Image 1 (tube, rainbow over the protein chains, first blue to last red):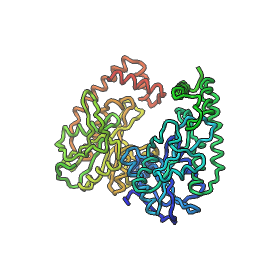
Image 2 (image 1 turned 90 degrees about the vertical axis):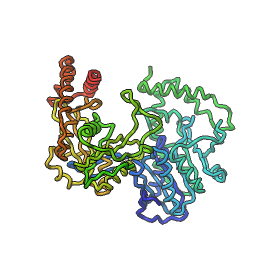
Image 3 (image 1 turned 45 degrees about the vertical axis):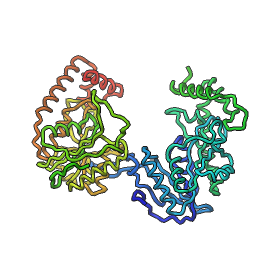
Image 4 (image 1 turned 45 degrees about the horizontal axis):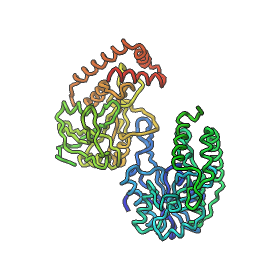
Length: 301
Length: 262
């Protein structure tokens, strides 16, 4: 293994799964995996040498002498339980393709060094859903042989279940690259993407908010896929608080926009359902109107 | 890429970056190269460190990212004049430090500007940051402020100091204060302060006449502006009295200076 990782403890794991996350849209995956790490009291055993991948985030100088340089972290944790886990959490994703690829390889090097044969990543799927709906989880495996398995998980859908997608799409950043590299190494993996309402994902600037409901949906799938018990009480409280916050913003939207968005309560963009009362053109128009509303400072004309 | 091996004993390597506040470091490097027999001997290939999807045009001319090393054998000195890389910055810094180690460098310095709430008529001071306490004694003989307490964002120079410390290479960065309204322009007074320091530190004996002329021209230009623009005069007068400006006044002063000095 390259000298860019420090392993300071040998994790006592057998046939572990790797669960990895980093910042992305709404930090959906990061919140879910960080919650999993905390609830399982996973123990840190190693870290990336972050300076190879990231610019420092801060410096401390005392009396003219450089003291410390702080970098975004990328840490490894392990959990021994019904199913042993290696968890990797990074505070950032590298900005360059080559570094993304290198980091994906390093993370897999560590996981495979300790016998990992299954990888999970998590992130967000921006979707035409209403914020009162239960977000589904798009499950994207890196091998056809896994399709039957992931289809069994509750509240998940495959890319081919989505209207007009024909099973196609793309996953940007490490969520995708890690699973691609895993596929290259013949290591099975699945990416779970929690749905985020398209208008919530587009709340601009000061209105940007997290969406823990999507993280909760991912955690529910993790519980099933990994066979672990996860106490959901904290994330439930978090999700409820955010839901109230979104509802407050929602009620402030002009009535005409709200009426359009309310249509999302009745439609489904998933196949084998009746065509919904909202078209692609309407979807684009609504998003433009929401953006325009916030551009004006979130005030009515 | 090393094109020629200069004969050096234990040189200091001085890095100057662009972009920089008022391009202080870059201008200092250029000023010294014009007056001293610096010879280019190596460069870092830009591939992988800079965006090369096209080229930038500045002042009607195509620019291409560069990181070039110049040596001054008679003073045992090396200058690196470099654009700031946008990718793989640690690897870039490692290449610089590899070069320093190959040359058996006694230390690494960086020079640059720092935006300050001062007037252009004020004296320029140099703030020094070192990567090891022991270096402070070496620099005690010079007129430097070595008492900074700071916690916050950092720069390529800060990153270089840290990376140098990982290899036990003594390193210091020197920051000259630049009036905020000259940050996008040039500040010959700041350049002069840095060259003065380097003159003393390395016994360079560089003539400052041209810089003095540049200072005179700029001061005349700003003096004329103060006479013709009461608002500008008032803001600069307040800075001279060490009285702060509001955010709006800062913006207005920058706008007026940019207009007058474009």
